[in-house]
Length: 315
Image 1 (cartoon, rainbow, N blue to C red):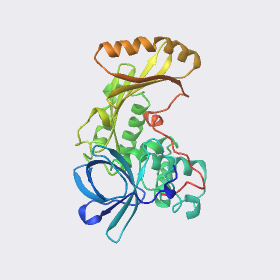
Image 2: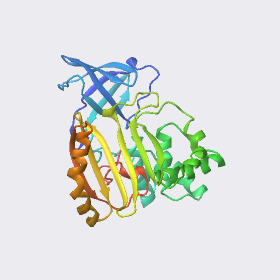
Image 3: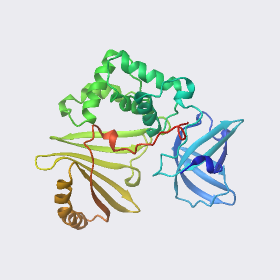
C-alpha cells in the first residue's frame, strides 16, 4: 500500500484539538462516530473532532490514521490499512540522507520506531544508539527502549538500567513473579500513553507467561475488540508455544505458533478438539490456525515487522 498514491483522506482544523500535538509521521487510532455529507465526526481517546473528507465512511468504523502534515492550522490525515505497515513511506528523514550510516543497528531502530508509531528522525536514532553503547546494552534492547519511549517513559538512572534489564527478562518470559517489583517503579511513572503507544500487561503463570496487548492509555478501558491476549507456554513435549487470541467481527481468532513442523502436525490434530471446547464454553470461534515460526526472543517479536528500503524509508 503506497500512501504517496492516496490523496489526503481527511482534513481537520487544529483549533479543534487545543493542547494536543499531532506531529507528521505519527499514527493514531480513531473511530467514526457520525457521518453526513462531506464531514464526519471522529473520536480519538477523549477528543471529538470534525473532519472533512470525500470518502464514504460508516459510523463505528475504526481507522488507523497517518498524520501527513500539520501546518497553517490544518492537519492532513491519511488512512493506513491496519494490516499493512510496509507502505508507510519514510523518504524525508531517511537516516542515510541525514548522514547516518545505514548499518544493521540503524535499520533495526528504524523498524522499531515504525512499529511503535513514532517519528523516524536522525536525532532519535542517534540518541538510542548512543544510549546502547554507553550502557553496554545489546541491540536487542532497542525495541524495549522504543516501546518505553512510545508510552512516555525515559530511562535515565542506574536504577532505571537495572529495571530495564529486569523488564527485558520479563518480556522474554524468564523473570520470576517475585522479581516483578524491580521494574514496577519504572513502568508506573505515567498513566497516559503518547500517540500510537501500545500498553502491555503481563503476568507469570508458573513457567508460562500471559500478556495483554492494548493500544491507548492505561486510563482507557480494555474492550474485547481492542486488545490481544498472548500466552507463552513452555511445553516439555512441544517446547516453546505462543497462543495469540483476538476478537474479530464478534468471533474469537486463535493463532498457535510452534517451532517445528513436527509439532505443527501434532497440534493440528488437536485443533478441532480445542475449537469444540471453546464453543462448548460459549465462545464463537472464527479462524484457528497453527503456524511454525523461529523462536521469538520477546513479546515484541509478535508485532508486525515493517519492510525497510531506500524507497519506502521516510517519516
